Image (tube, rainbow, N blue to C red; front, side, top):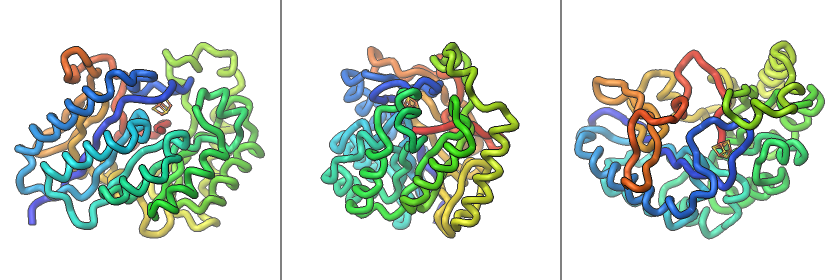
Length: 311
Ligand code: SF4
């Protein structure tokens, strides 16, 4: 058999923009989504010609907020993936999702049938006041409901994203968030320290002053590593923790320099003999993305770095 390949598909759309986010994602751009999906499918087809001999063993729909696309558009993308690529029978297929766009049980069942077997849900905090401050479009109760819905829909591998070091957050607040989130029994947890990115709304807000300093964040982090270990989550990377055998296979490709192909305006790629940045912006009028545009940094970190990713 040939070599394995990871496929990362960037979905640069969100319902709204979180105050800390500097990823390339467009809020309230509904009118552009169908054309983007068309372009993405065309790009999938064009790139497939160069993937002969490869078996795709991980697929990752990242964002942005892929779940915001809804069932039909996601099925279109997944159909294209299956049509143009050789997909391993045991492929890990991950969808990034937000709790406010994961409530449709029919959608979850349909996506499960279309091959999605892992969902990474952006929870970020168990404190609704904090979620509002961050501009998150959901409550913690919605996150709890989303996890229950994903389980009912047949998703057996769930990852939950959290952020620590939020404005005004104490160790006690963070501990409560982690405990309430771990009580949902996800297979995987990602815990990121908040980093203020210049140019984001957070960078110019008063709330910035209330962000715990580096020493406090280090205390949060060290407690997190210890506590998750006690709860049965092994740390396999700076910010990622998993039950045995439940680490993200796609994520590991980034850390082990495995081959992956990223399509869309945000991702990087290391594929074949070359690595290229692949950054750009989506140009709806041209129906294509423009390489080298204003996306400030790749969607995924390089080994040796840590950062806040979401959705
Ligand atoms: S953090 Fe996630 S949900 Fe929020 S704006 Fe950025 S990509 Fe969208």
